[in-house]
Image (tube, rainbow, N blue to C red; front, side):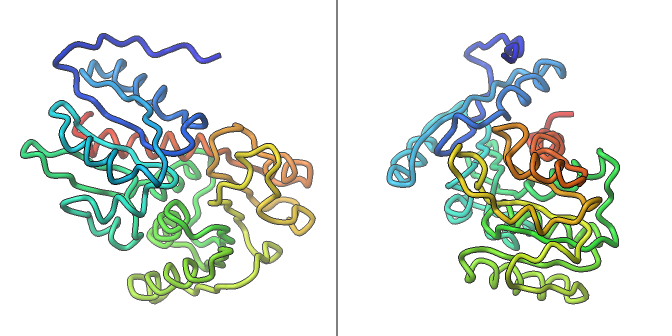
Length: 269
């Protein structure tokens, strides 16, 4: 069981909410509260669960909170929040989703996308610089799109992209073609055999009865396999990859990289 980060919350404490549905898998609030405590920042991060059917009512209520300093959207709210912010940074517009919103002093909401930045920083922190590598990315939703653009920024050599919703994959590929025309991108079935890095950006693995996002028998021993899921900490995909002789990087590593970027965006550190 995790030890709660020590906090002193007063009427002057700045409030940040992590919004999603479900929310039980979220580990970021503990991490962010720890960073706030270590840095001596008068801020608190709390989880807030509401479903897509309550999106308009819940976000409308958030607009009225005078001590709200920021929002960290997770599944399934990242894409819808892009249309709700008053200003979206260029990366968020490219990705088509936001996973960090800063409330400005005048009350305006500024949105940014750090999922992919955190993912790349997590890779580097574990000795896996993606520059010049080939990548199979499974999932082209908010997280997957952000990862695709961050990997392109990091200088990967080639990207294979798959999503069960072919339209999502096509949209990400089109955005990459516009902003990174030099990057070869292939949209099609999952084919991890010819790549250096396999990345799962789908929610498959969060549920006990979820199917695997790809067939582990197609993995090649020695290739890096990564997952963005936080809970369970080691997903069935990563367990299967390790059994095949593949090095792995867990989702929490991406969260740590994302947290550093988020804290700076919120004006801390």
